[in-house]
Length: 81
Image (tube, rainbow, N blue to C red; front, side):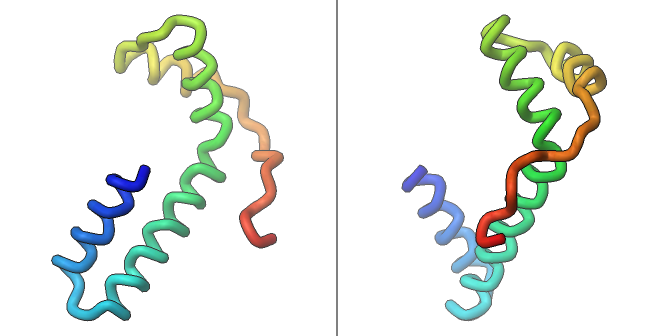
């Protein structure tokens, strides 16, 4: 995880003008990622369960698992809320 975080910082510092801007950009990326996981939690969980069962999934398998995932609200509470 540390290497991934460092790469994100390196990329942000390359594409953004100042440390204030790249810190804001990184914060935005974190929040957008968290929102995506919150919204797609059921699909992520279904794919993870399928991977535990089968170990590998084709692209078509992943689509089928996602399509059959139950549509219910994520029980997880947002960070800080």
